[in-house]
Amino acid sequence: MKDTVEGNYISQVPLFEGLDEEQQESLHSKMGQSTLRRGEVLFEEGDPGTRLYIITEGKVKLGHTSIDGRENLLAVLGPGEIIGELTLFDPGPRSTTATAVSPVTLLHLDHADLVTTLYNNPSMSKHMLRALARRLRRTNESLADLVFSDVPGRVAKALLDLAERFGSNTENGVHVPHDLTQEELAQLVGASRETVNKSLADFVSRGWIQLEGRAVTLIDIERLARRAR
Image (cartoon, rainbow, N blue to C red; front, side):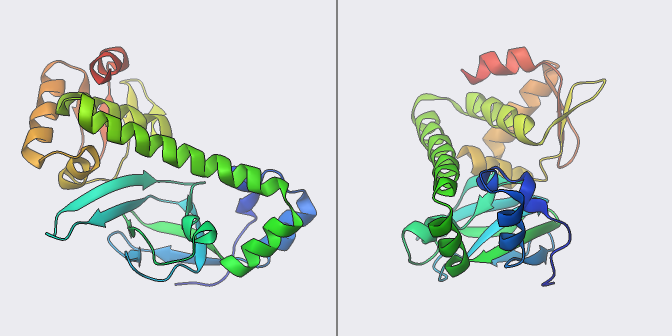
């Protein structure tokens, strides 16, 4: 891991958009930088939470392991998103395990420095609460999908969500380098790998998507959206 910060990335992070240039520079001076290889763990469930992380490159998955050893993938986060904000408001152990699913670069800020910044810049709290609300809304939608949607519908919705956050337009459709294995994608939608693979194969046969290893190209967004409802 490396402890120097290159470039003032925080000016691009929605959480800090309420700070002026001088305030951003002051906060920037308190930050360090970390790098992770794919599969490397940033922190584990139960670890003490003393830092806030901001992803600048790559993707990190947040997961939970049940008592019987089953894994559930709660979220996949990418550039500009924050990790570890919950322990700022509710001090205690980490509630998830954060693992890199691609090479990752992060900025980190100790909670003590963040608390001081929030105290001196109350408007920043509004942006942090908005980020928390977005995360909570996404979690609520995922819980509702587990109850009301079938597996193909959940797979279609997950692909559309990944496309919105990580996709780019190409001649063939929206290319989405999600960096997830088939098992991780299954964990994300809360289904078995076999059932998810069957749904993906069906989408391919219908011409809606094209699979490319740890990436997918969405060819027919409209039909996928209808299937996700």
